Image (cartoon, rainbow, N blue to C red; front, top):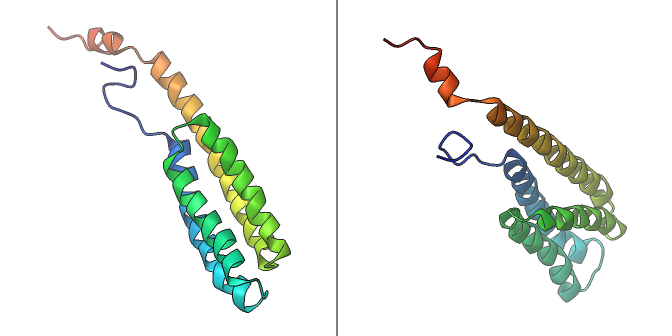
Length: 134
């Protein structure tokens, strides 16, 4: 039996961060037509930047099993804010997603630590012996 009471516990940090990245990927993909029509960015550049960042978000959302992927996630947050130099509203949206990423990351880590402490303090044998079965 594993130390997490026989079931594979899902990482709250991974789930929350993946959700943020998935939504951010949609927003970054939608910046592509904005870059072409409003910012006069050449189509090839807009596709590479907008869809490239969107694809990176979606791929990274699936790669969050690795601790290094979270570092790449922080880099993506900086890239989303930097996209504001081309599409000014991305200063706001990038900062918003950066805030959501930070909340998901740090809150998820806190939940993981508290869950690990609770599992470490759980003794299934003590529960069985204290029930007083005859």
